[in-house]
Length: 226
Length: 233
Image (tube, rainbow over all chains, first blue to last red; front, top):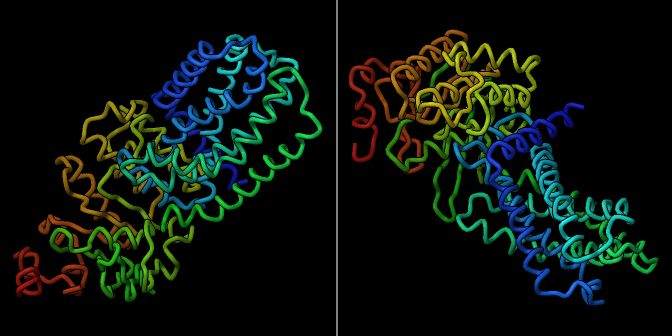
């Protein structure tokens, strides 16, 4: 219980700090809505091709917008050397890391849930019939984005070009999870259930989440302290 | 058992040895002043003792435990160059947060007590970003002392403090020493530090040039240690 309380303490602190400044969430939301709007002028929503690329388009927006939030995850600790105080506290590095992951997860998911109806309107897709399954894919895909983004946010926190480095490190590793989420989302945002052939992608997404959560938890102490 | 024991510690930045075979200790109730010129390795040594980075060779023990062990961290309080409190949170929220992270039984009560002890009780709900420099520094002191640490690691604690913050910190440090807490502080303010110190360690380019008890000569002439044991002595 103590471990979960420590995770919750860090997560609540991060969400509270972000909601007071709204630095990351405003940038992320504005970026997501802008890209969705611009792409809606580029593609004809009536075309079959639009339906085929809708999942990919949506996850590209989520991945790019999410990185703006994830960049702030550990960078938020830099002013006043707050990271020192967190590292000095008698909590496991994994609790600190998971607390930050959950905070970023909530913020990224909030941006996604606001973007989804906008996407539905601009691209004339009927995502509501499959919302429970779509929400499940969003949870899995967002966790993959968050876990990779947060560990690299920790790794790049002391680098001057961290805003550039984070996406460069995150996206290549995130590729299998993004491919799975795109594939699964394409059917769901068009109101169709996940085809049986695509269950392998679902398994890959779940596997990715489990493996990279375990790897990140194993490495985080080394990443934080060296 | 020493409160802080540093045994043959080496620390490299790339190929450059920032700490070379450092061997020192501070007993319970001692106040060790770490002095040396800029770049001598004082901050690196303090951060390594605090467990913020690991030594490539050698060992550090806090009451016989590794610095990264939770029990050792619970015993340590650290004041670094930054104030280590969040601008977006109020003074009370900051201290309550750290009270929770240190597992205090009643974090809010402890936070309120320390806000009173540092004269910040009237602004407890004010956001730190709206605080003056002196208020922020006093909050940093409250954050470091909140969990009643038995080992205090202070990196240039008097630098840039206003008179009131210096008075608060000196009072807390004297109370700490009276309660047999161990203090290790790096400093350039030799006069303030040597008044408190029971022991002195002089670092010179990552090497320990002197380590011993503070003498009256050092108090009378703060430059004495540099002149006697420093570079070119």
